[in-house]
Length: 76
Image (cartoon, rainbow, N blue to C red):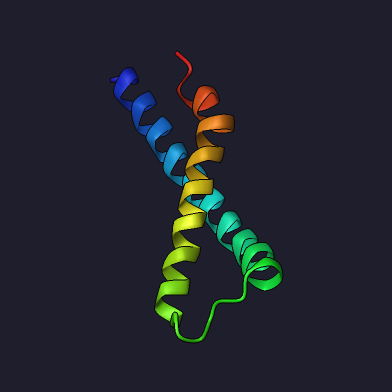
């Protein structure tokens, strides 16, 4: 029973951590990449720019989670 609760708590912490990281990275990518470094061409469309924004944020979130949080949350 205790092992199941521990796994559940770790899973919830993982989801919350990933969600917070994604929100942070979504804003970071929006501010840095799309405001200062990259201005999407009008022919590309808003949907493609939004998809790129989400993709970059997801990749950065996965990398940051793996680098900084995975070991601390799932250490035995």
